Image (cartoon, rainbow, N blue to C red):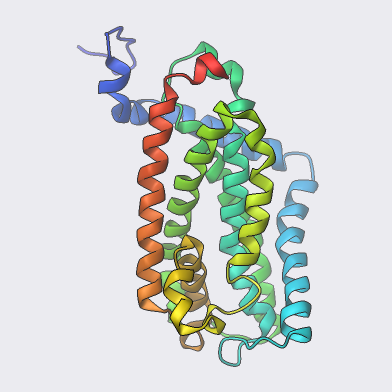
Length: 276
């Protein structure tokens, strides 16, 4: 009888059975994810407090600057704070996923150089850890809805769909940046700038509806535009609209990053143990 846990030494097996090995090493994926979650939250309030304060404080700043001072319009008659926070949730999930996954291989150098397993497990587990932060931050949105007496519509049932799109976007971009970070160590200093720059060119502090019509399709080449608009539509209901051509453009760019990210990661994966 064949034992599925039996170690098989076979030339080229890592290439031929790579995706099947993802399932075989699923327990390692659970262990790495749980380890990162435990390190962040166990016996400390810093992790929980930071997961709450970071999007909350950013929301307050954006509400004051864009809503009060610049007087940008909100979607419908929705309180500006809720509109901004509905965008902060997917953005913070994306930014945290990319930042954490970009350093994940370097942080696990000893594991990579000693044991074989599909290396893609490590950056993906970092995305899962960021998802826990998302769930913690989501609690604040519930409090905001109670505070402003805002009732979400049935659209909120579609929220898991847009969350999955955000997950795929973060995974695709994260895999590509992770591979670059291993090969070019100074790239880790560029990642925070990219994430910060992306915050201001994404419709987080304002509604994407203020973008002139002739530029909206081009603007939607930022994959997070479709994700953020989707989150707002799911949370705010009919008060927010999705620009369908732009949303489809964002989905296309998201799929491109996913395929390209996996391709570059797999192409460079063979040399990780040597250059890390």
